[in-house]
Amino acid sequence: MALDKSWFTEPVEATGTAFSLKLGEKLHEEQTPYQKIEIFKTESFGYLMTIDGCTMVSTRDNFLYHEMMSHVALNSHPNPKNVVVVGGGDCGTLREVLKHPEVTQATQVEIDERVTRLAEQYFPELCTANDDPRATLFFGDGIQWMKDAAPESIDLIIIDSTDPVGPAEGLFGRRFYLDCIKALKPDGMLVQQSESPLLHLELIKEMHETMRVAGFAQTHLFHFPQPLYPSGWWSGSIASKSSAPLVERLDAAAIAKLDTQYYNAAIHRGAFAVPNYVAKAIGQ
Ligand code: SAM
Image 1: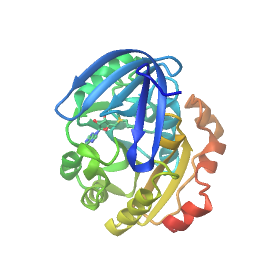
Image 2: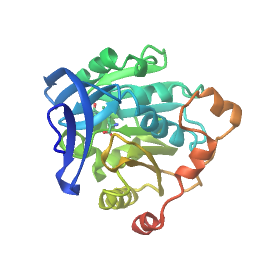
Image 3: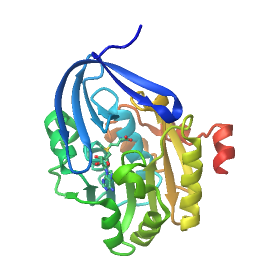
């Protein structure tokens, strides 16, 4: 059966794959100076935001991505106080970061203010921490922001960006990583969404190499399910400035307070279990 216009489809030419969702109606469409944003009501995934035709966030499954992009790295760092989210305009990652009482400052640096304004309208549950006194919402280019950041001022940088094309391309490059290393404290870390371990192994390999060449002492891959993104299997990559082993701050009472739907101590440990072919590619 060929899919008609009542389906949203994200075809990925490079990987010969496509993902589809049955639609209710299109609620919004706009071209911003940076990208085309669309909002749909879907039959089974709630609301869906797409950017330039790529799925970004859905009501139903965003908890997987947002919890894993925040808590894994936050609980691998000895004492994360000052956290910066680059991208992440839907505010879901920011909300998860601010569940940690040890975080004293969380800055979201999103290039496109319209992503956040539309998230406030269609995904208000992701924006509930935006008025937390520890939160700052800055609208501008994360690449320039990081160039200007005070040296050794940040504990954790979370790069919650679109794919490495358009405004996000530079967020995957050596020069950006060098600026991150400068801005991080000596025990600082960076975590970045790193696409699918099945479809984008070459990208992951290059990313880890670039991170290490830039000067990060160690890199680690973790992975999780994400039905909305190509192949349904996604990853994050942690790069640490120090060579000290990653800590595991997995105190049961503290984790229970995070009130997560997916993340827990066993998921944290299991997420770092890397399949053989991936370990071989990234030398882990
Ligand atoms: N979870 C999503 C994924 O993996 O596809 C990403 C969601 S989030 C909406 C991605 C955000 O990164 C977008 O809102 C986009 O505007 C932002 N972004 C892209 N390039 C950026 C840059 N150079 N500086 C800051 N934000 C950027």
